[in-house]
Amino acid sequence: MQDLQSTIQGLNLSGLTNSNVAFMKVATDRGRSTAAGTLPAVLIAPLREQMPRGGGTNSQDDITYPFFVGIVAGDNQDQADNYELYLNWRMNIRRAFHAKQLGPLTVENIACWVEPGDAVDQQAFYLNLFSSWLIVQVVCRETRNQG
View (spheres, rainbow, N blue to C red):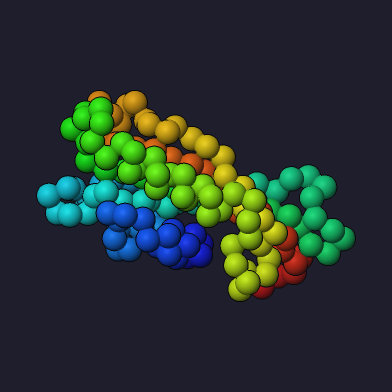
């Protein structure tokens, strides 16, 4: 899970500090504000995993771990301010994960796939926030045994 966080931090996205790439139980902007310097941020949170019936081998199961990856920033309903910057972050995050393996140390990871979400969340816009999100599907093949 921290591989997602470190991969996004390694993208060195302009205007985003590493401390504002946060892995959370539930993705929320609670406790984050522009005044405190904690926005903009990229929030990462796990979603319900999936096990396709018939996936895997005789001794291993295929399981997909989906993760919400959201870009959140203070916006004040500005139609142009930082729009290109945040969509560039979104594009780079998608490129970092889509049809790729997380890394050499994650031997169980077969591939990652990115499912696009809202490029701009209209409800957040009316709450003076910019919100854009993706779902990163981390597909793993895990050995069937108790740990």
